Length: 328
Image (cartoon, rainbow, N blue to C red; front, side, top):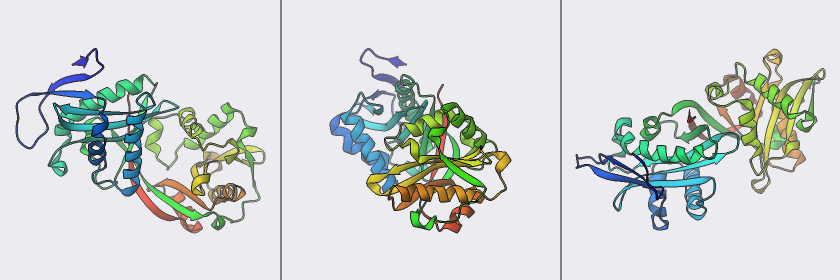
């Protein structure tokens, strides 16, 4: 198999249908505008309302801006669509697989082996595109109960189950420990911030599997690339003048919310019950900007963090699984 001069990938494979069929030529190509509704229907089948909105927006972006960092591809035999994929490149060597689905009347019975016949060439074409944009790691999210066979078919590994929580910013007014002070991250150099975050990753209970795929500098680059990024919304926790933790947030002014993207404490400073002070600092950042709510995502297995959030009155509004794989 290979790329034709047109940039379309052709592969001879068995069609993914309930009954055996003769060999067909599977064409992996950019989507046609008339196929957008079919792609959305395929990629959003069984998804939550939140994920349906995300996928629909990504499909529209891929069709309207084919040279942008979001790409959509379909696999078809003649006029019959057999599968579709949407992916995006982010800074820091990271990509997002928004959706990868195979068209079959027996979706619930689709095995990874059967899915691979169409998913593999689709994913190969997507990774070729993302490689050109220096992507080295791809992550994807899905329902926690029923991960798509397509993800397993192309080598993704389960990394964590996340719970998304929300609370009124005014509820985060607990007294900060007098032993801690908080300064803007702008007072530290980039190297100092990276080193601090790397230290907080050691023996972390929050998505520990992610550390085998991404280093701190890559993760921070992806945070900074967000249009909502505000350098003064990152705070460093200090104890006796030494940096011991961080609170990294994103202000979403349009939705009147602050995202607590990441917080962590270095190993030597753990066990002092300072986590609550970091959460309170996030509330202060939100209130300084007049934002009403604070939202965050937490690993469902991170019991210490879950207990802190419960004490502050955070409530769950969404959950999903995170999967990932490297492509370098």
